[in-house]
Length: 298
Image (cartoon, rainbow, N blue to C red; front, top):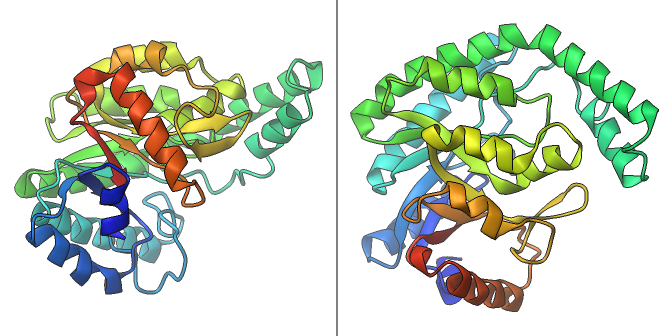
């Protein structure tokens, strides 16, 4: 796996969720041999042994069930220790969701309407308003749980020397929303171990649903920005596509990122190797100042 990633033209890797513990010795061996640099780690790494699929949200800090919240914390602290071992700069975190808002019923319905060309209809506008009102009503309890968890994790992050990167999410039902993200970042503004991780694909999905404006949102988050996941989007909701194959305007959006920031190509495993190599060549011509920055997940 590591050799395949290196052969694509990357030399830096983000160790990501979905990786089984059985793969850890081989990854560790390759790292100790100097085969790759580790930019960061995405929670949970490795995946909990009892979870048989790639499920980064198997345990949430916002869960109604205390044992699930405890397991989320346990696995996160374990991942922090591994991040330090691999000399990672950051740990990407999902903070949870609102369990009373199943995605399929709420913004999943908006997505279906957009796919059917109904995004300019009065029915679409009415459902979007209903989604926002429901989310605003149900969100505070779960947001408070997420902040309490992050306060505990931040203490350990300082000990390990790893920054906590709270990721933008693709579902409006997830924690935090954009308004909540600003409140969260302001809550931790004096803590150097907490910041914002921008996922270009996730935010573009919300842009496509009319829930935000991508460029404006990214400009608001510049003061808190630690890095980004880079992937493209096929209208309206197919993300994790190879850059330059979808709708994202990278030249416009990347003015908000400092060149030295980590930006990780987070691509679907179904993408073709040649397509990735070709896109990387285009990237290096378009953004020569970032030539040492791109990495990809393992």
